[in-house]
Structure formats: structure tokens, C-alpha cells
Image (cartoon, rainbow, N blue to C red; front, side):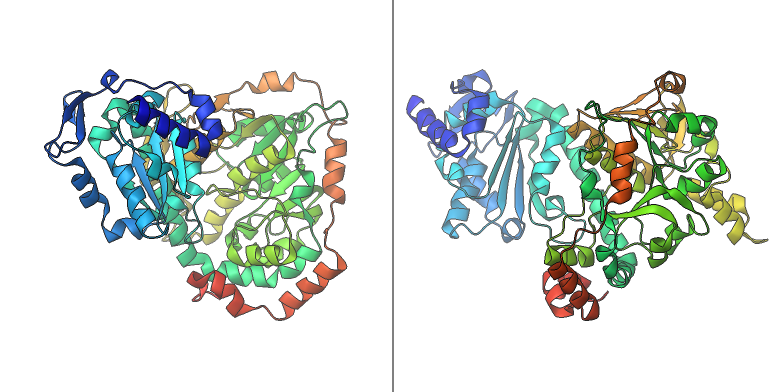
Length: 535
């Protein structure tokens, strides 16, 4: 055992020195977890908790039969939920080596370091540690697994390794840590669902994304960039400024009477659907954000004006968005291929605000990019308190009235919004039931996973009636109002946003003009072939 362990640990330490230092260097007796016995072939086999981990006849042949199929090697990643003694992992490593190293990336998930070290004390794992594309998630929190898997090459817009992975999931390998693996499976499935939604969205709006982006290319030479505000949300004393993200959910109605006073104590970031309500209350937010390319998103701000607000958008937005009367226009990095292609050509990094299914997730990312350590939310409900979809008088509600007819009343539109996406019941921050749906839960899950990955940024809701989201705590509005004003403290940050200008050099401007005059369609499609039908 000592010889095998020393050989394996040396290979492991050479490949992952930091992980080896974190996990220690002492072998774990296999008998701690498993009942060992000899298989008919003479190899070691084992059982745990009365459940056999590997074949009692020939564990190597069993592993080869399970992993030698073409469908495994057609994927970009192979994910192991646990691995027993490691026969299957070692077998696929040998198969990849036989193919000259051409094969999927391996991701090994095991929450218990002891099980991993016990396996290394029995079998020769050196073929595994020789793999170039290998990720070992040992002792990692369940929430950290998804980002590791997402590092694989994208196979489509919005897709990640989750959509192009083969999952090796045997109950015998995961029984020792069933709750942990249940969480991992849940996170993976929700992300797969997100990718399905992204694929459907691409099919529906791909042509619109491309058309808008091509029309708006000149904006790269006119607008400032969100990235110029990175870690700038600090006062002269180096204290982080608190942010307030304002959505158009029903709970905003309770917060609206205090919105002027709240703006004196926070940097306010308003999603476009809530702008009409804020202007009606006599408040121009510090920032307005719109990232949806649809015409209906533009309709939320059509006819409005906020000359004291900085406006954040991306190049795929409806072209009329760029005529909005505001203090300054700032571009974030595009999440869609045309914008990404042009940004790469120009060498630009406008500032990534990510995706999360809703503009509120981009608003949260902006606050964090700016350096916020406290983020409050209002009207961000992920639910339908009192069976309301939006704050009364919002642009969404007004749209219902605009489209209404004798046969399609506003109530009909409201009912469709309430029940069209698998309506279900969740719990609010007081433990009371609240109506929500699968779409809202998807948005809430994004926040849950994002907040878990950013523990240094604390997030609060000012109304407890929304869907309770792990990582978001309920806060008292009156307590926030008792804080001192920061109007003067935030002026430097707002001035930086107001004066941000396009950072393009003369050479970049010339390249942009060339791209706008004659977009290299075939070069673009060689990188994004799935958009051929949309461009």
C-alpha cells in the first residue's frame, strides 16, 4: 500500500501542488470506508455499507465496458460523481492516452478527501494525473462544481460544459455523501434547464440580436464603457458605497414613498421596467440599465427622459435606446456573438455584466463590478405577492391596458403572466406562502448561486413579501433610512460615470468604421456557424 500511495501522491502533488498542500499528505486506510476482497480476476474489489462498488468478477473489464463507448468520447467533458476505488477513472484515462490525448476533459467530484486518498492507496492512479485535461474537485463546496464544469469550451451561445458533458453517476459511488451529490445534481439540472431556455431564446431572437448589433456598431465609438467604473464605487475615505437595485415588482409600491430618501443613502440602479414608476415619484435614479434587445424592452422607456441618470445598455439593444435622453450612455460587454466578435476585433473589454435571465442580475453584477459590498434591493420579488405581477402604474401594466380589447381584458394578460410558466407556491422571508413560477425560480436560482460565489458582497431585500432566496436577507427600510446621507460621498463616482467616453484610438475607430461599412460575414460565421440562418 505504501508503495502505491507514495507513487500516486507524488504524481498528484506534481500535478496539483496547491491542492496537495491543502488536503494533506497522509494515506487513509481503505478499510476505514470499505470492505475489501479479491475479485475472481485477482483484482481488488470492495463494498461500502453493504453495497458493492465494483464487479466481483473483473472490475477492469466492467470499467472498460462502461466507458469504451463512442457516446462518451463525443462529449467535451466526462463528469464522475464519485468513483469508488477508481477503476472507471483509470480506464478512461488509459483510453484517452491510447487516442493520443484526444478526448474529453475529466472532472472528478468527491466531497470527502478521505475517500479520495483511500482510493489512491489501492490502485495505480498515475495515468489519471498524466492527463492534460483534468479537473479534481475534492472537498469543494457543491456550489463550486458548476463553475469548474463551465470552464469547458462553449458549444453554442449561452451553453457551457453542462450541455456537452457525459455524467457518470452510479448510486454506489455517491451513497456515502448522498445529500452533497443531490445538491450537485440539482444545480446541474437547473443549469441545463437554463441552457435549454437560452437555446430557445436564440431560435426566437437570434435574427434580432444580429440585426440590432449590426445597426449599433457605431456606438462603440460614441459610448463610454462600464468597465471604466470597476472598483470606483468608493468615497474619498476608501469606504464602499451601498447600492440599491430597483425592480418593478409589486413590493416596490411600499418602498416608493421613501425612494427619494433612499437615494440620498445609496447609489440607485433602476431596471428599465421600473423607471416610469420612479419618475412619477419625482426621482431620477443614478443609473438605468437595459440589456434586453427586444422592442418591448425599449417601450418601457419610450417617451421618458432622465437627464440626470447614466444609462447602461449593450450593443444589441433596440437602436432607439441609444437616443434616450440621459446624462451619459455606457456600454457593457455584449453577451451575443456579433458584439463579441467586434469587441475581439477592436480589443475592447467594455465590462462584463454576465447573464442571469433578467436585467436585475446585470444590475447586481454592475454593483459588484463597481465595488459594492452592500447591495439592497426593492421590487425584486421573484414572485407575485397578492397575485400582482408588477407595481401598479408600471409600464408593463400600462402595456396590458394598451393591448386590451373587449375580448382580451387587462385581467386576462395578468392571469396569463401569473399562470403561464408552471405556477407554484414558494415561501417569502416570513415563511408565508407566496405565488411564483418556474421562470421566477430560475432567476432566483441565479442569484442564489451567484451570491454563494461572492460571499464578500452582502445582499438585502427591503420587503419580505418576495420569494425567499438563500443569500438574500430581509432588511428594515427604516433602519436604512436612519443611516447618514452619502450624497456628497458618491459624487466622485457619479462624475466618473458621467464623463466616461469611448476609449477607442484612431486605429480602432478606423477598424470600427471598416467593420460597420462591410461586416466580414463569412469570417464571423466560421466562428459562430450556428448563426448562419440568422445573419
